[in-house]
Image 1 (tube, rainbow, N blue to C red):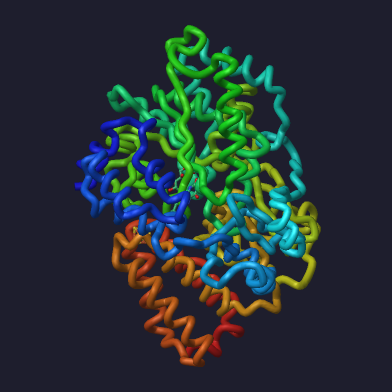
Image 2 (image 1 turned 30 degrees about the vertical axis):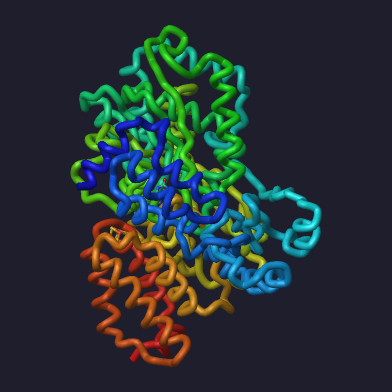
Length: 549
Ligand SMILES: Cc1cc2nc3c(=O)[nH]c(=O)nc-3n(C[C@H](O)[C@H](O)[C@H](O)COP(=O)(O)O)c2cc1C
Ligand code: SF4
């Protein structure tokens, strides 16, 4: 059935998008009307259960969130900073309880006190000016954070637009197989978490016969603590689009789709205007510069669901289906969006292609370590003396990032949660053992992931933190497989009742539950959530033991 739905949704192509129409129908009231859902179901021949099933999944379309006017960030960094209770209190002076919702996360982890109002994000001191924000329709939503490269600047280097356009024109004069070879030679591995080499993904997409192929830029950066994809889209937009075009040229794809989270309204606007710049340069459309390469972009604004960062849920989402994870194989490169070959890559992975085309694959390969080439953006939250984004060569000691570039912590910290909610909890005592690369983290029982760093203060209860992780995991579970659908919820119930009612958790039962989640889940959402919990139990047993019998 989902396969039929893919074809029906794809009947009108990517430009006339069911998902986009559902999003537009939700703008006025916060949720589409029943009549509009039925009309869309008829238009796309998919049945009203499907349109209903899809919209009820998303924060920005579900009927329960109708009438919400302002959203408070409930991500991990804002939680650890302890700013959100007072943000909510200040908002309650201006909004009714039922008008206040939640968003996870706004990517303002470097400033905290984050909230979203009328399509704008605010953080830091903005809440103190909330009266004037509302009264004067004062829409300034800017934030500031440090960005520094230590070593070679691959992703943070400024580009000259004219040179970038020139580089693109030259690249399209080269044979596409040469471009693919260059990418493979770089050894660039995906930065979205799994670390899969992009060259192999593009080659796999190329090898499947099809009249249409897609490059999808996964800009659903949902990991609380991460804002490096946001940085790239807002400060280096042409590098991201350049990378997508190069990937499209190498894989024989003719569409580049940017799936950008709605929590990043500025990214959507900035990427849109960068697309227009490329169009103005005659670098988009049919037979670009006589190269025989036809390519165009489409932005799809997401609607608030963490699981849509998982590539197959993301594809279902674009198709207007309920964004449940798909079983693999077939892989998206064989059978992806609308059943067509599709390469899904992270923003940072794609932005890295600019350096590779400019300097060559072997120059990129020479940076970093043997198995983790290139550089990595690391996001530091407000717990650091110098919050912001640092670009470091893969293989850089973590201690350097923390103490030299992040300048240590504002208050005593006991652990770092690195790599998003599914990443490991690294005790401070382990920092000296780790280097910023895939292998070092995995070998030590952690995960580099997208390399966001949330600092957990000594004063913050780890059981509260674990409870927050299970709350997040159960809320964001797509519900497709029962170990995760039920397991994350049961785990949250256990941690919640131990915190609130002092009910001791049966250690054996809990261990069994973690094992079932890790071994039985269909994707890394349910499969990954036990990792930080196990790390916490291993390294902070003294603190946690009181909650178990
Ligand atoms: C629960 C979950 C959430 C994910 N969220 C993201 C995300 O926000 N951004 C992203 O690029 N990849 C995310 N991924 C990984 C994607 O499924 C996929 O591996 C990635 O987009 C591939 O791009 P890459 O090879 O360039 O990393 C997520 C995976 C899971 C299981
Ligand atoms: S592990 Fe969770 S998110 Fe992943 S498929 Fe199963 S229910 Fe969905």
